[in-house]
Image 1: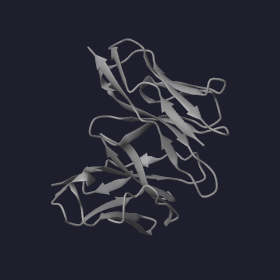
Image 2 (image 1 turned 30 degrees about the horizontal axis):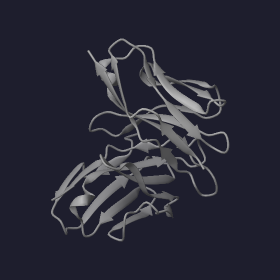
Image 3 (image 1 turned 135 degrees about the vertical axis):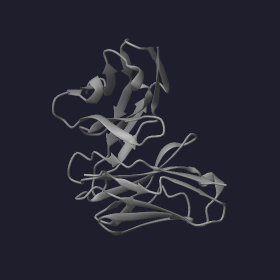
Length: 115
Length: 114
């Protein structure tokens, strides 16, 4: 069965320092993986997605993620954090099979950015 | 495209009242999802539709909750009677089934049941 595990519920960084949000997935076949971001009192917005093309995926706002099959990981990174990056981030795997096309969401990582 | 549209954005009601949340998916999308988000339980999938047909309603909390999709451009989530524990943000999302399953989320409806 497909699942995702976000290893940190809270991450705090200083503005200008790198961001690393960790995600491990479990899937019986090659998955589609996503990162969504949710700013306070807002809906969810897609940051980036992996769909079996290039393993290094670039998203919006300078974020990127690397699909590593050997490690079953899809960590989200950004070289330099900005105050506006403070939000909750969800790692997501797509569930396929028959009529099913659900997304399985991780529990979220709350990113705080200190000035 | 206007994206996924939800109404109302905020709803405050009293326990026992009926609540109806509405969603208009992105034109051309054939899958629609209803989620609930709370601090305690996080983001939960309640029900989803493919081509207006309910596929999986295992996330619907109980019989007080019902969802319909009478056509490709409209869906409702109804709670009758409402209870304080139903207070949450309810999101609607749509996607194009057969693609990469990226879901596009609406802004949500913040429901408060007093």
